[in-house]
Length: 484
Image (cartoon, one colour):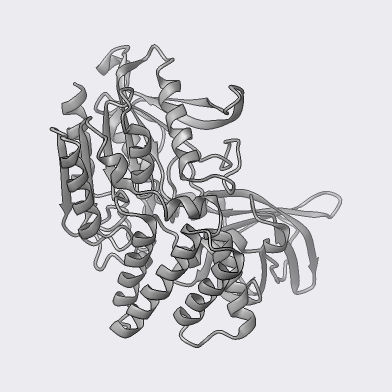
């Protein structure tokens, strides 16, 4: 399951923000830094400006959560205090974040208030130019214009059961340069993101893996379509109300859209799914002749509750926790997931999730904090998406895929563990009688296909590399060989 983790997703979905600061100049200001959430640092950027009428306005970006330009309201600047709230997309009003920071010179330190608890925040005064320069240094693989290929913004209609357009997905269609590859039609891939509200680049900690894949393929004569998830960025629809099968419907709509374009070879449209996107892709590709090939990047191939349990166990193992603790956590997590899958009712689900939260909190939570954390977890998993995630058997769909399949997972993946998932992919594709299935474990790579030390999620933000060049070439070579 793609980062952020359960705890980080809960915080990212629920942070509401009040900053405390001393502002001496009524000039536009940019602050950048991190919320120190459990298990990871969440990067944020705050922009503030004062109008001629003296009223302050501002926005918040959370690049790793695909949040850009979230408005701030209730801004108050008085002496040493700046207070405001951020209105995050899709967050209920009571969950919008509040920060309290003390500023000394160009540094700000304080706390982000989250559901009765708090997490540390550190910010530095900066500029947009400095942010871009630092991003180039931190993420050198990110493609930046001018490009040696063509890109265009598109709107992809997604139709409801009534035959009317339910919403549109905003995306980028990337086409090879005509001087080298002609006018087309070109083979094309649809990229499908992992868990969480993702933008078209699958941005996480400033890494943009889908933009890098699109760049690589365009340079080799392969087009691509990558879209913001429904309800994210410029796309319509409601992400919070969507389940796994809804995301499959969105991917299917993208394939159908490409089949209306003369510049695309309708017989050579494929899918690239990452993490949970590696579950979505088989939902689309099974028994579907419109999908010519599929690439599964760290794709989920076992049921979601097994993914979550194995993921948590690996995380606790890396933290050095005893086997007895891990076993009990696994037992409680499975009981909670069973309650969601079997629809045992609100009371049972809450009781079991709270037991898990209290256990995994290792006795360091008070009653109020345990209740707040349980509410957060309920908000993440006790919905249509969570029920489908722990119910759908990915192998049921993998076993109906006869088109060429490339499935790769890093040996250090701690989110979609290679052992159980690659074995499930191999078995299901053999059952399908698939004659062109390649399933590979790539040594030393993590869930994002970075070269890593341990594979722990805390490493994602600190690694400069976004996507291993050899893995990228493997994907490109495989696609070109099957579409040339």
